[in-house]
Length: 264
Image (cartoon, rainbow, N blue to C red; front, side, top):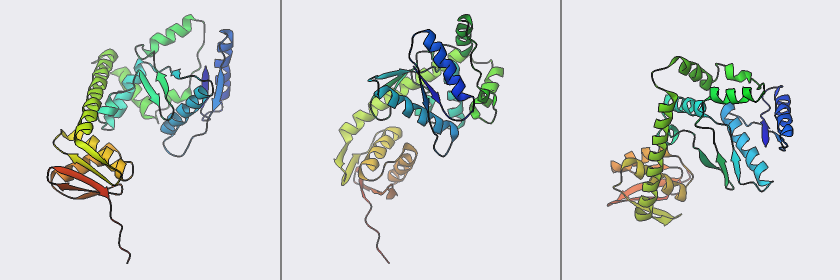
């Protein structure tokens, strides 16, 4: 067992000690992992640092799987947060029941995604445990908390129905990933000096191929800019992205390193 202290509240060390006490009563070892956050969005930095700490903790113990406590309410809140930001398929596919942590292959399992928060609170109460209440869960400065409060008033669609939609979107994302791999195997070739792509696939599949080609020849890029390159290439225009010059030659899209700029 591991408990992460994000260093955001003075109460956190005592809360981790509370978790360790419960674990000790169950004869389960528990480690407290203090972390420091980088600059930027607090919640995003906390997420990155948390998983990095858990990954290192697992590797040091030859553990290849970590289980987290994400539950159904987290899934629904995440869906609406990403919907509000205009996320694409990857974002709307939500929290996966099983994923890999970046770096060495440590699998993250989320076995509680099918349970509501209230159900889990009841289990804790019946076990005679008075849970710690994180005051940040009442802080409306966070998008998640504002969405949580709105969802409490929204009864037109059940959490279970939204979760089913998220699961369908996750299946769709898996299908796109499969089609993308097949498309790139058949239509994308080359090396770091030049990549060639035989166009003709649906726009999203083409965008994924462009993202891969640009990242191979130049610098790593993301899907949004790659989709803009697709639009330009479909119009027959030459375009630059991440150190790569993309152009159209016959039925192929060609990606080469940008030529050096002339001094002057």
